Image 1 (cartoon, rainbow, N blue to C red):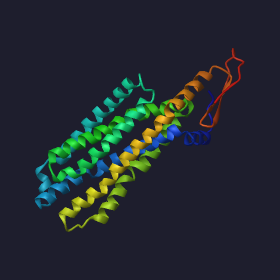
Image 2 (tube, rainbow, N blue to C red; image 1 turned 45 degrees about the vertical axis):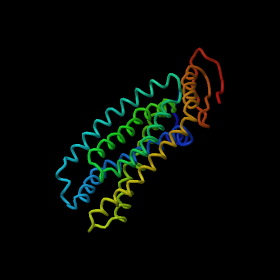
Image 3 (cartoon, rainbow, N blue to C red; image 1 turned 135 degrees about the vertical axis):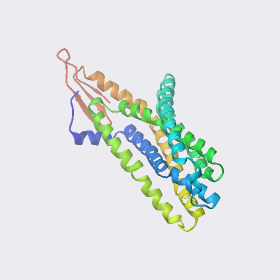
Image 4 (cartoon, rainbow, N blue to C red; image 1 turned 90 degrees about the vertical axis):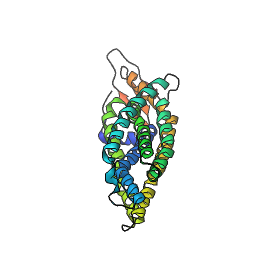
Length: 267
């Protein structure tokens, strides 16, 4: 299988609907995680301060340690559960990875909403909800990597990983704190503890909608995933013959082995 130019690789990846939808869905996950990692502790602290009408009330709780520990545990269990669940369901549903990612984000959206409003009700309920939210978000991590490698031919996988990494972080966790922070500042009165909490809370409501959008994008992936994987599988098999394989509108020329004189086209 011959390597192609970097520019041709980029054009092929951009015209690959499975890869693009996977990357956009993962960007939504990074957007939500970036916002929560930046503002979750501030939200809980501002809620406790507003409830007690005391700007130092949050010091009575070990918020950073508790949130950090829940995040670590959610990440570990989320990644392991996602990989295990995807592998198990793939026996019966070929596009199981995409369905699991979609379902986890759709379920995550309402939990995220309640996690944002719960600090004013009960601190411990909020921590439990934060754990559930991060667990559901982390379910997608291993599955996204597996799907990405499955829908891209081997000679373009490093470029695909780089493009997806730049896209997901530049448009996800790198920019989300700035967007949420700007909205929060516009809604906040610095002289009121209550509006400091409500302003940040309402700004973070954006993440619930982005989470649902990610679920929708992964649902679209289910329409393309199986065909894209089959195309890649045929391209790999064709590497032992003199063939031209068409994937995502691009012809992939595969050099022949000495024992092969075939010349076939897969569409």
